[in-house]
Amino acid sequence: MREIKFRAWDKDGNIMYAVRDISFCGEELDTYEMQGDWIGFESIELMQYTGLKDKNGKEIYEGDIVKENEYFNCNYEVYYSKNSCSFNGIKIGDRDCNTLEFPQLAECGEVIGNIYSNPEEVPNG
Image (cartoon, rainbow, N blue to C red):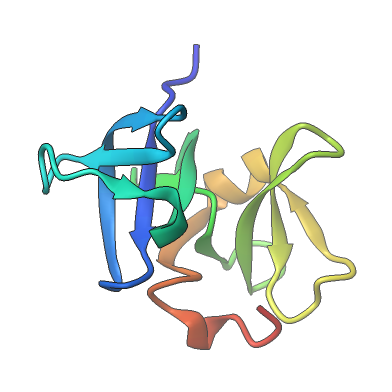
């Protein structure tokens, strides 16, 4: 069974946090770094762990940028597709096509950043 965990991008502080606890009723979360200082949902972008790791063993979350060198030599943004109920990778710079099945991307790709810390990598973001 896949481990369920999240991380959060603090839009005001430009910091990525590992999420410790989420209160959906209060619409806020607690992080390991802040321990007890809750952050409201309006201040963060919440990202879920995909359950997979890249070729170097690094955990992959939605919003990560994964560099794939084996097949197409492209960078992909990891996102959750509501249509297929699965995580996918979409080629950066070409949002209308060129998705890559996520397990394939994870096994041959390498996390090089994310769309929040590295917005320069997402020209059509």
